Image 1 (cartoon, rainbow, N blue to C red):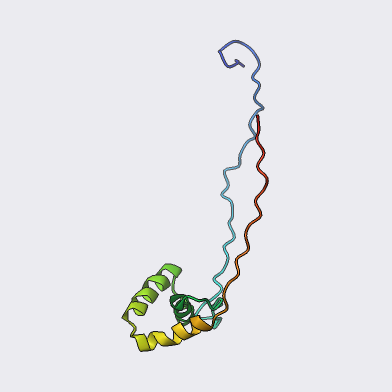
Image 2: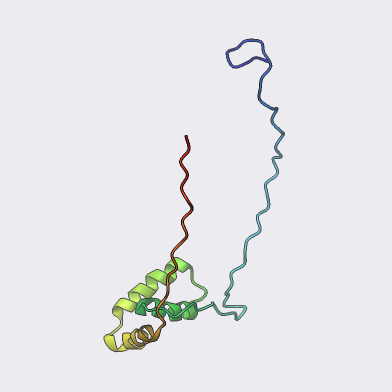
Length: 113
């Protein structure tokens, strides 16, 4: 074997292990909600945002849809709703508990030479 510069020295690299060509099997998680199985989606927490509270309910009604479709269609529905229809979710948001945020502890920064 030749070294880095082409000189007849031994290489310092370890020999590579042979890799198998067989494809790896990937286990996929099954959807937590399916229309056929009768399971329902977890609704999530009540927040101080009226739209998110509406989206929680909308997600339960359309559990079989993809997440992006739920968000897009939910936003369209929210925009088309009247103030009277939104009032239910606005009142729910007013009654929701205020979230307390905890500050992260920062690691001490070390200077390296």
